[in-house]
Length: 399
Image (cartoon, rainbow, N blue to C red; front, side, top):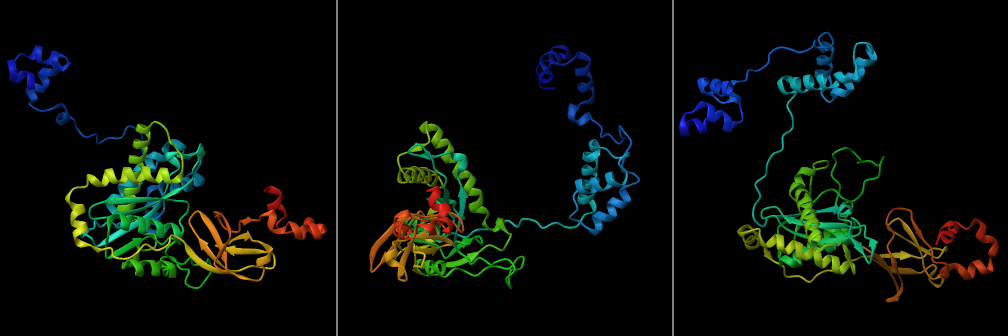
């Protein structure tokens, strides 16, 4: 059509458009584009295999809206295996999809939210296995604690090893002290870092029931002057800004690592500095909305809390202490004594009379054990027969 407006020669226009002269003449005569000439097909190319079965399918869809087309197809195959074959599943899926759109129940929609400057910060943990970062040549399995201001999308990330209270404290404080300002609210999901775990079977363990905040998390929020709040149970979309931000951050880190040429770092601190650099570069391009966020928040006027959680733990007759569902051996001279334990994200420190007695790597998981042979060797020498049935025998043998 464009060529025809230039010179009016149908043959030359058809040649430049890559079509036959007769086809070109047809389009010129019609005065419409090819896409406008097509007619909707109102006939079937093969018989509908679900004509007689559709009444039953529709009844089941009305009675039980959660049923999937695949489940219904498997039901029909069991009833009449000779009539229904695997290649017909897509046909039923299309029919069910059309029925849901035309006659199905109303669906819950995503209600877009209007964020206010400086109102809230959202925090979430995200895994980083796809980045394949190594420390000193060893694979570094870790997470990032990501904090986002939803209004401006200002973002900060802290390297951590678990979704613990210590990691959450480090992540929140790291971000706020970078900002120098404090929003009114801090929002998390219902993770055990901020809320109490409700054991299965316990009264109150009901679908959709929100959990209460941990005392350590409440103290952190009170110190920083923020009001804590969580998303509704099962409603991750309420933390949607930070959820979306996680993917964007990891894409930026991936691109920065590709430019760097390798993924190995000397230490965790070096990797954290790299993450900081990527975050600062992204935040610098977020425009005036960051300034609006900062202007609406109050100044951060408190000191940073230590990035560990303290607990008082008594040493058992086995010369062990139990910390966060895991057992650690300690020098036997401490048996029966109360110790002060500092729980960091990556390590455990045990103090007695304000003196450090033990520092070791923190175990990841539940019911794990770390037994140092130096803490039990003298008892085993005096009672060698006890080793055969010693409850920590396998742990010592594997060390």
